Amino acid sequence: MQVYIHQFADFLRFHMNSISVGLVATLLMIYGAKINNYFKKITRSVPFIGRFALFVVLCSAGYAFLSSQLVRFLKMFLRGQADLPLIGIIAGAFLVLAFLARSGKDV
Picture (tube, rainbow, N blue to C red):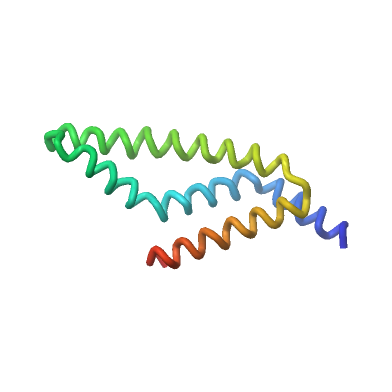
């Protein structure tokens, strides 16, 4: 059984880039609207043109920076895990994200 666990963990390690991007992208999809609403609330006093420019910067630079750093951190964290914890963490993370999406009416 240990051989199969090791093979599956190696498969996950081979696809770590895609898994990390998938987890981070799903997280941003679930909480992106809340982030945007909070940003809208804190920039309410800024004139429309300034608010629009700040929103463009948030979307183009802010989300790009946030996602790249989260993906990098997640890959480093997951690569340091042993076989069985790696499988459990990845499966658990996708399950938690599925429940968050379900409770947030995103599904």
